[in-house]
Image (cartoon, rainbow, N blue to C red; front, side, top):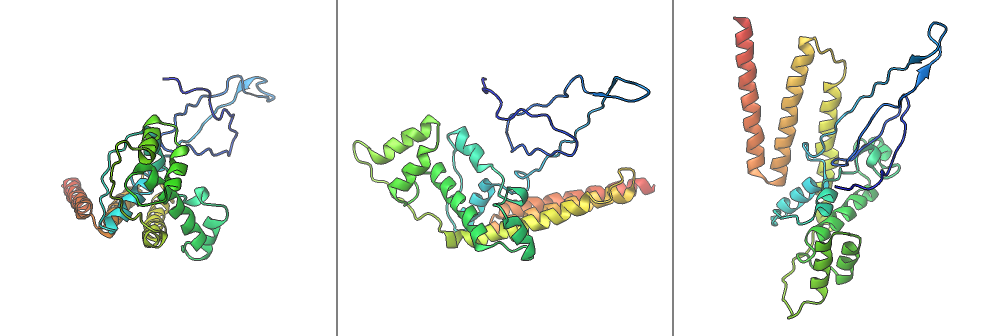
Length: 271
């Protein structure tokens, strides 16, 4: 597999942070020959340490794929789909524009308003969601042909180029029954739930879980356990909000099993 040349090749210094999107090929190594000069040792090798942190956005439902899933389920529309190209698949798994990924100034305004999105912030997310809905299923939605062509023209994989051709020059003519694409107003309450409720609650749990951590402390271990249970509840709430009973029940069962495991472990330690 030829990935071509690197998009970015940099030397990171102390205090630098680099964000690598989900699924993005990357590699790291330590620059050789770095030295410290001191009175005791004029050529001592400097120790290099870096910390890699994974943001499980796909696990906790913070991607455009999850937003699409919730929008279509809330609207009682079919949400299952066979994605035919890697290009659009990875685009749907992109993280929602939270934190430093948000449009300039919007995350600060989000906090200043007590965790409420501005209308402009909602517009950005809704516009990208609309683009992805069209890219995934160009023949499904009743949208202007020029908009379909515009969306597909920015894709490089051949399957969508074929779709673009078939939507404009079918021979013999094919009648396609298209359905209304979710509007901005229909998407807004779901977008707001993802940002103002779902994400905010997850961030609060993560902040609590990783504050004042002592891996040798029973208190830290119990905090991690309860935080994990709280995360499961939030994911169950997301399933309930989207109208997905299976997801809600799955996380409830997971919570129950962990409670049983914790009780059994505590009883065994008390013997």
